[in-house]
Length: 338
Image 1: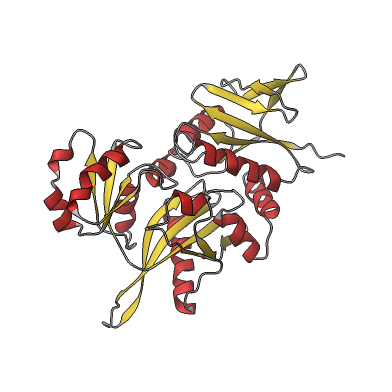
Image 2: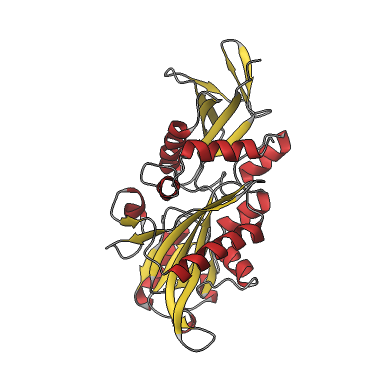
């Protein structure tokens, strides 16, 4: 008996500055999916304009009542949504709530986890309670900027520091501030992306990024990628325009590699994540329990819809682990049906 192919929607686009990045991730995912096993469609979601690419140069509108579309006079229903929107509404819990309501399984974590990981400040405070090391930070809300003075920021956080949207990705709106006179313009820049801005202490060290996913059968922590850039920080150009050296696996000691893997798996479990996530860290130096200098692992942020472009970390790490993206995507999808 011939197996019926599942209909997979790669849901991309979104309403943030990361729309174009998301479209590139969708193309990457489309190339990875097993077309012998799945009917794969790219669905572009932007505002109220939801449409599916039919693969022949035409599109069809998505019926938001049940996330279906009409092809050749027949309604097509999706069995699964692979969300690759970077930013709202796919990375902050909004789209997840929609799919929960209509009963379509999806690739990311649930509403609460997505909302929390999207807000960098909230996530840091939550994980700090579990003993995860994070940089010192404070929150500034639009309309209440005067509640935190430049002098207070300098005293509490120190210089240099990072000013970033509390809820955003791909390094849009982020500035490295070297003195307090640069704070106000940096905050204004960040607020163009988010009404809440996080001011975060700068930690010197080695930046790494680690992918992870889990199924009923196994737990997979991928080899870490070390990020080396001549830019001030790992900004948009470094991420997507090649202005970076990416070394996989990262040049870490055996002990630090083990600790990073254990911490990544632990954070995945703390948050009850689903699908592929990517956690960014800074490996700094500091005194250990015995007073000797050791590597200190600081969590920077968690990406629950990590990039899947040709230059993205996850495909690199999957290859370094001796696997293929096709195998990994099939494993993740089928985990929610078996």
